[in-house]
Image 1 (tube, one colour):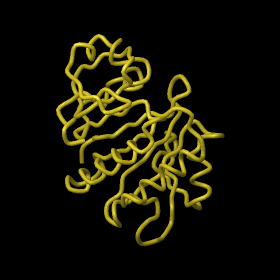
Image 2 (image 1 turned 30 degrees about the vertical axis):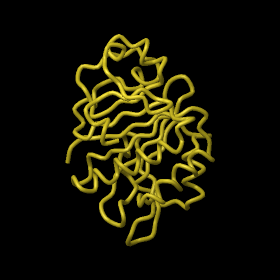
Image 3 (image 1 turned 120 degrees about the vertical axis):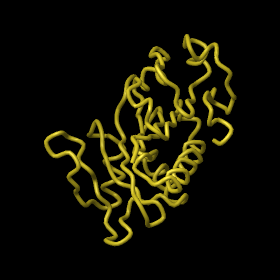
Length: 197
């Protein structure tokens, strides 16, 4: 599988935002409950125990995903009872929270379904979502996406499928300001996959 990803960036993140996001993802067929065991699991992101899984209740997941006491949390989502992907919610710069979906873990058909579902979910929260990045192949995984989306300061060495930023970020970014974009309020969206979003 590739290192493909979908990152979204949010302001004012709370437990309620986590609950709304999770509910919207579940409505799209992406569920935190294992299809066989019926368990929801946290995934350790710390180096000593990276990948270790701990079962939690839905309420515990929502509480932890609100990042009231933690800097980051990881958990798995299952695509319609089939394959799963890692989700990481973390504090980024300037009070922004990044929600990272590792869509590259999925087979192609499920990956496209997940990307579409995540994009629709992010669109419902567009007032608080300041931008997103879609890179199905993971070719731009080394890019400082926090710097691009939040601050408009980092350069792009290669191009993702799509990157959406606020208009003021696009206008001030030396590469984005000269590129063609599609306006999908409240973002300027750049990249080859814009029509399919």
